[in-house]
Image (cartoon, helix red, strand yellow):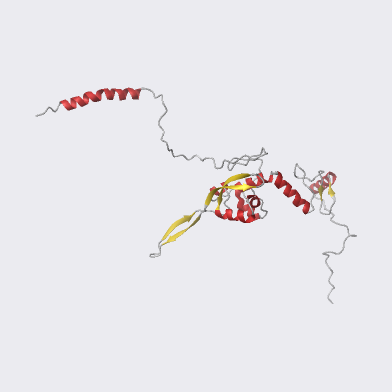
Length: 256
């Protein structure tokens, strides 16, 4: 019969130094960094867009999420639904919900449709660079139809401003700071017969403003107007001598 006590004895003898080494390693304070796997799961939002620098300008393209006090607030505010649309050109797109209906038993299963969103680089003629942004395919078709990103951002219709969203509103403001767009607005004002705007903004050249009848509204007139408003005084819009009978109520003849 072969010996049976030698194998456990040998195993115990061989494992005793290893156990002592493990205990010594556990008692020794760690001097190296803990092991981290090569792929980690994180919820930290990465940088959305790394925009190029605008040539010959010190004003960078605004960030998507960082606060910018110099930019006027978006008139419609951030979108309460589908918050992802606040960081791109999504138009009026949002997640749609519906049902999948089986053809055999007509069993309904809830489902949703997400917008077709892509990361694109769109050329801006006024900025002279490619602007990185998230954009839906429907907005891309609109950009091609109107003639480029600049024409899309500078649209004047209220629905266009509503479709821009907070990110499009910031791009619109940055576009209006370029000399090309400012020159375009100056030509449009000149074509409409309006006086040019001063560099400071808010007043016309010379610090004076024209009234609808063509007279100049100086400081004295504005002071007098503010005083009358404070005293709740009545304004005389015209004299009786200059009355041409417009919208005058005619007296009806009395019935006999």
